Amino acid sequence: MEAVVLTFSRPETTGAVTRGAARLFTALGFAPLTEVVLPNGRRADIMALGPRGQIAIAEVKSGLEDFRTDRKWGDYLPYCDAFFFAVAPEFPRQILPEEPGLVVADAFDGAVLREAPITSLPAARRKALTLAFARLAAVRASAV
Figure 1 (tube, helix red, strand yellow):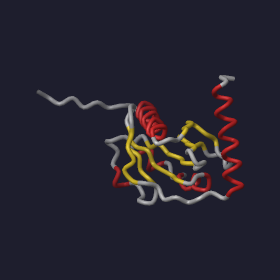
Figure 2 (cartoon, helix red, strand yellow):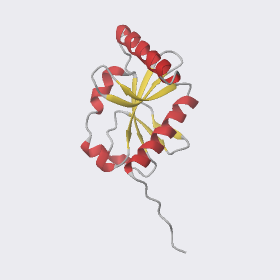
Figure 3 (tube, rainbow, N blue to C red):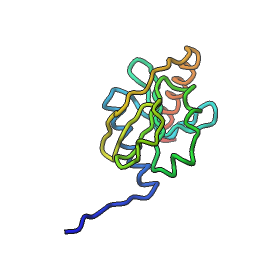
Figure 4 (cartoon, one colour):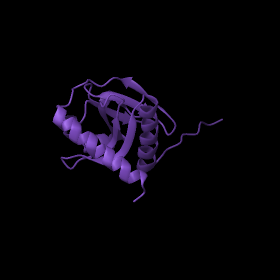
């Protein structure tokens, strides 16, 4: 019998990894939001607020080409305590830098394969980001 290989489009892969990584953050006690615009104009794929106010950001990479053409991940670091790449199980993980954390996820769940280094945000920036996060969550919850 011949093996069947399923291939997914870039948007399908991005959606599946985003969903699984968000579910993982929730299971870890974080409240995730997707597509969060940061003060520098960059858009975080996932931003999650932890139980003690810590902020994590995950940059979803749908494939090798997505990673190679998008080198803006350093622009997220000033806006989080912990930064992760989130990728699908079949992603070639050996090409990713070793510094950030690493989440592998599918549409149903995810796992942290490498913890992110913790760099505490300055208090004023944390407060501003937390307030912006809360306001965005409230607007989305009210479906306005």
